Image (cartoon, rainbow, N blue to C red; front, top):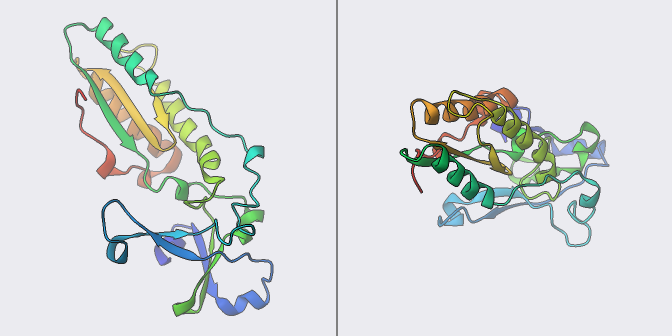
Length: 218
């Protein structure tokens, strides 16, 4: 919580403030599996915005009124591979995946809605109010979609000697895919462009270094 507070992603108070801030909606915190790890020791903490059923934040979020992002199907990746092979028949065509760190947490909700994202930390007698689009909130994908689209746009309008019409900019929520023929500085240019786009939109901490894969043919 302190780390999130330092990054202006949440506010923390003594629970006594609920006597004044009576409008704050409280949702419980929970732990879910993180990969194959034991949730008792390495789970992911979530704000359970789907509880209680019928009265939760997700139940009362009008997702239909949000401008939902539209994504290309993965066929676009296969098409780009074929295009690069045609343009550079003697070169290997490689792929690289990049990922935004804590994607939804980098996207703030509106200030007049923050009171809906409260949660109690009973052992510390504390109240936490989330300021970012929470993981598990039904409105988070649409909220983050604007940011992801901006990253993809900035990356896609970048060009180099080998792709003068712009770099390939496929993305799905917070996952971005590069496709490039391995000629000259082409792969390095695409890699740098995607990183720069992420940093331009979300700052230095936007890049999930562990999820940026090496260039490969599969």
